[in-house]
Amino acid sequence: MSTPRIIRVAIIGCGSYGAEHAKFLSVYGGVKLHAVADLDGARAEDFRKKYGAGYATTDVARLWADPELDAVWICTQHHTHAPLAEAAAAAGKHFFLEKPLAITLKDCNRIVEAVERTGVTAAAGFKLRFFPAVIAAKQFITKPTLTVAQVIDDHWPAEFWANDPIQGGGNVLSQGCHIMDTVLHLHAAPPVRVYAAGGNLYHPSRDIVDVAAITVSFADGSVANVAVGDVGVAPHASKFAVQLSDGAKSLSLYNRLNSLMTREDKKITEHPAWPEEGAGVIDTAFVTARAGGKPSPCGVRCARRTSAVMIAVVDSVRWGKAIDLTGPIFETR
Ligand SMILES: NC(=O)c1ccc[n+]([C@@H]2O[C@H](COP(=O)([O-])OP(=O)(O)OC[C@H]3O[C@@H](n4cnc5c(N)ncnc54)[C@H](O)[C@@H]3O)[C@@H](O)[C@H]2O)c1
Image 1 (cartoon, rainbow, N blue to C red):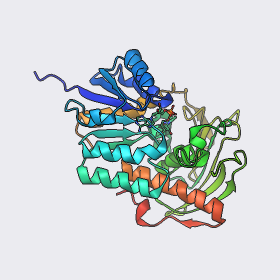
Image 2 (tube, rainbow, N blue to C red; image 1 turned 90 degrees about the horizontal axis):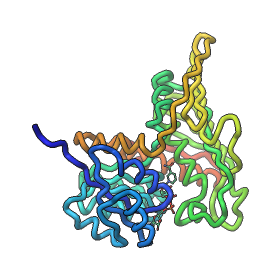
Image 3 (cartoon, rainbow, N blue to C red; image 1 turned 30 degrees about the horizontal axis):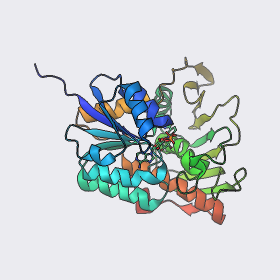
Image 4 (cartoon, rainbow, N blue to C red; image 1 turned 90 degrees about the vertical axis):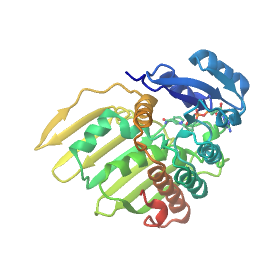
């Protein structure tokens, strides 16, 4: 009987979301948290102790040269995603990259090209697609005609790195990508046009867009309205919420997309809420794909399309006009 293969992984970026992945990867069967890396040595060392990693380092080059390492989880600020992803791919390391893929088209292209040149398996951190309620919603309505969706967060501090135009991109680019990715995933046809109104309502010291009301048109004639901003969580709908209709059926996803209510023939069904598993749902999908030699469950071309749509949203807000979404950068295959 052959011994099951252990996948040796490292986390780059021992911050708040690196911790969510560390909690999962340090206990998941078939995975060994082999190393952790951070520019801040004390942070990396804390992670090593807390999650039982093999070693901690401030030098990512040590990871690239480590023949035992199979894959890295890149959980760092957005402007570092492209250089770290390129280095991982060049070293033949498979990688999971936190969302968004990147916040410039140039960086998105660098990542897609590196993955396609080297053939490594790479996934982007769009965990919401893997939430059980979202999977059930996609099965219940396969071709939505009208969608209403939101990610509405509490106020971000002005000094938060995600509000920095270079490191983070601001709320719309940084967090709006989560709900936009979910909407693009739930619609049956590709997006063809976007128009957005909004601006910088709360962070005047930063050159970012922090609020947007977005309209997306899809190739099959369907449309979506998407609201994004750190304007204060909506108490009933919650931070993340989606409503889909197809003319005959409708549904509401709420409670951070962990609860689902469906309506068919005027009969409403309220499904029991699923517990939120956070990073674990997408880590499971990526680890399972790696272990089975299967394609990425959330590939970089799809993630590039989501970033490209959000960059178009910001352009639309700034220029006051609709943006065409039919160029090659929006292709997912
Ligand atoms: N999927 C989600 O729900 C979710 C939630 C929060 C954050 N995120 C994403 O996770 C990523 C990290 O966000 P965070 O909130 O954990 O940030 P954070 O600031 O808490 O942690 C980032 C860490 O990366 C380290 N770092 C930066 N550049 C590095 C480099 N070149 N090499 C090694 N270490 C480096 C920093 O020192 C820091 O410790 C971002 O892409 C963010 O958008 C995703």
